[in-house]
Image (tube, rainbow, N blue to C red):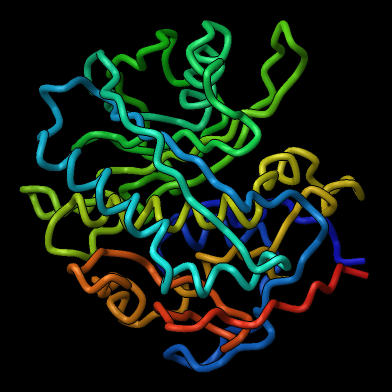
Amino acid sequence: MTKPLVRAMNVFVAPKSRADISIRARVAMPADIAPGIPPSPDHDLIFNGGKRIANLNFFNFYVGGAEFWQVSDIQSIDTALSTAMSDQNLNNVIVQYFPDGSITSNFLGSQVLNGPPPAVVSQGDIEAMVGTMSDSGALDTFDLSSTVFNFMLPSGTILNTDPNPTTSSSNMAAIAIPKDDEDSTNGLGGYHGSIHPMRADGQQTVYYAVGVFSETRPDGTVNGIPVFDQPWKNIVATFYHELNEARTDADVEDAIRAGNDPSATKFLGWVSRQGEECGDFPVFEAKPLTLVFQEVAKTDGSGTVPVQFQYSVAVHGPEGPIANPDPPAPMVAVA
């Protein structure tokens, strides 16, 4: 049996960044492969028996108040992400991880969350906010078993992986904390996870994803993983990455929490032996990143959408949109 992972790669990081180096140091990795993106069967995803979400729903929350978001950016993100997640040629790659050959995606809408833009957001902050929403009944109308709640952070906000809250307020009021190697100024773009709030109708799982406003700032420093010419496109690519990982490896956070417990592996869905989810290897190995971050033609021919290519077992590497579905990936459980 594969050794349980200390941390599966549920994070979105720039290759060779401090965040990448820090996180990968906690996950056993093989020797570096050759530069570029040649076929790499050693990184093929393996099904471990964990939950997948074939019929995915998602809702977008914009953190930081309406005055800190351009209406045109919100509209562009909502439209492009909805289009990308339901695009036939893009889904022809992802469908290989679902043996019945069918996946759907449903965008449920978006909402701007009131409150000042936070200076720093940790995993503890996001999970506290999700828990507060759940406790208040704000999520009661959603099918929690198939819905991912996306939290888009505004320009200037730094994201890190600290499991502890950095604020005492549910609206994550701005404060300053020391810089972390695993933060968005060091290559972190986002991550996905889940919490288990205690509810009147019994304990349930609530799935979330969070992503930074990836941009090159006026002083020349970088926050997140800016690749495209406009930050909203970077946000779309980040959440395309996170949502595809969430639907192929929904309960990765439970595996991370279990740590070295032998039960950890059973929570994992499609993950490589190196701990990579479907979006990770393409980012780690792309030199330059524009090899896998591209604006691709929509299946209906109506324009383009910015995405990040995902890993395909069919080609043993990153794959862009294709006209015909890839064959089902082998359903080989870890022995």
